Image (cartoon, rainbow, N blue to C red):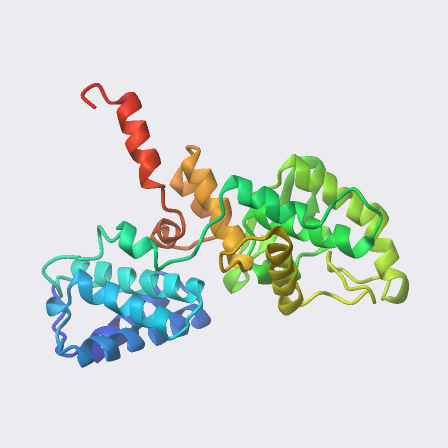
Length: 306
């Protein structure tokens, strides 16, 4: 049975119910998606589009370019594209539009608008900005933060709120509380395990000298207080400056690089989705693009008619 919907606003109203009831998204997530989509509708209406069937891929790319010109963070731009792709897929499934024009929106032009990722070499440079060989507790803490965020693909909020009881280093996993208070299990690499083990046994006790001995958060300040998102953001920015990386680096860059490097090395997209804690696979597709040069190289190497 097809829905009969006359305006863009009424489409959005039905889509809101779909996200809440069918997809089970949190109120905050639904609110964020709706804000993105209202901004998109405003933009395309200014271009004379009053029906979603009239929207083109170029309109969507122009919208993202406009977002970039307005100074939006790359992670916010990526979320806007996720919102648009989810909406168009929903409308196509409900037969409100003739085709889903966003289904193949992974062009090089588009990806230049979305979050920067770091190469493996750049990740090494970023990590080495805070040497793990010395005895300075804050320097060691900062290196541990960077290593953990890249090793596990953590959001900045997940890093700030990580608890000691969530670390299961003997099993090489950590338990992460993500968006909507959803818990997931994420593997942790051996370099990160080594760093966090030393941090907890040697460095954190020094930082906790002036703090509450029962503080549950893993990462604390020099006064033993839990670190907030802003301080972790500053740690990443400082590391990028020391490493001489000119890209616009922020905490989400490490998460994006984590996913991209996994995908480039052959990891299954569904497994990456699980490790990132994405409710929808389309979100994972946005944050994990494959370098086209590698695609061409693999095709030439393995296709019999390449």
